[in-house]
Image 1 (cartoon, one colour):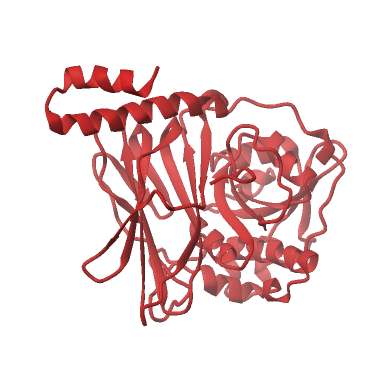
Image 2 (cartoon, helix red, strand yellow):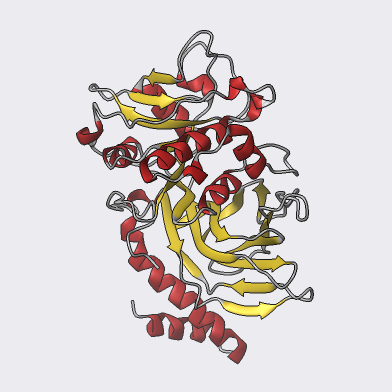
Length: 384
């Protein structure tokens, strides 16, 4: 249905002049949602990548910070969870804040915050925003969870710093998910079966304070992989250095998803973000393309008989066996008993990964040949 037709229908219901702007806004959202819905079969998840911010309204805050406000962004699905990722070149002494307001057919929520992110953890302590809960939803550290599904969002980014310097925002990734939908299984990509991507093996248990370091350890393995492939020694970091770079003081801990990808994405020509895949077939697409993927899957569900740690867990998928089982570098490895590389049964990984609604970190060079974005679950080549 044309946008103007929908807008006129809404105006008949809301004839006051002030409502005309809302009518056009909602009509545009309706129309764009209708066109976008075909990208996401079943409406489980959708990823929107932004690297051109010309359409964001630009203003100054009372403190002189630069504020970027997006137009209404249709999600393409009805969503009840949102994870926002960002990549920025941020000099020492700068910071950014990311917020989102969910838009439904009758109202907009408050702006929920992902907290303050900065590479300068001394001057601007990196921290999630703490308790944010009302009748519309709540923020769970790195994930906005709504009480009722919405169809669109507005994003607000605040850029600040000292000495007139500001971060340069390179990328925003919006990962929408409808947790009430179970993604339909897709046929396996057998091109990934029997393929192993050589990736350095590291255990978080090698470090005295590393009990909760699964995420930075997984990220370190992937960064070291790209350091080797790209001949970039600045990516060849140690786990403690990465842990310090992703630490969330409010949580406290190192498992904040967007803080991890923001650290990786702060390096020149690296893209890093959080998204939800449709299932094992899409994970195989990335392995077939030669790109290891960090997946969120509870440790105790990956192998029967393990005790429940009560927390999430990040590992690195580096390949598949010839029969389709999953080859994983698992940071939670006791090196006295086993190697970091594990083979986990396909069914166990599917079940464990589903606990996070198939959450992944995708970290790769901007020049990489990434898989075809069949269902709108990651950034497409040339997306703006």
